[in-house]
Amino acid sequence: MLKSGGRKPRRITFIKAKLRKGDGWADVQIGNVSRTGLMLRSASPPAVGERIELRHRGWGMTGSVVWRERSRVGIEADTPIDEEELLAASGIGRPHSEALHDQPRRTIWHWLRRR
Image (cartoon, rainbow, N blue to C red):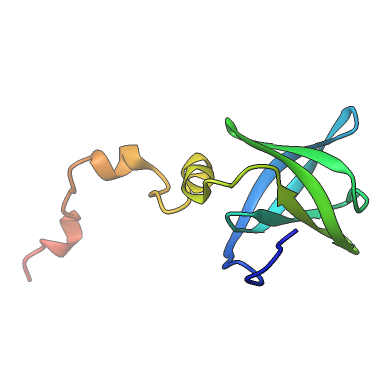
């Protein structure tokens, strides 16, 4: 838990991830992330105090559930979270298709029609 200094700044995200609680994996959504933890949405959220592991495209973290409200849970990370690494793994901020953007632009023929 945060000792002093209050709540850390959050980055809002909508990243799908896999949550391991106990010996099974479940689909979850990362709702926001900070350096010290994150908020998840889950159909079957873990209980307060439960240890979890979270994975997303090669990125991962471990932590503990510190609060739970309906389908949302707050996770305190065991080690500081590299937010940029998570966002890079998710593709946030990158064009939908980099290959498409690498192609030369073509002029649409009907714009060139003479009248």
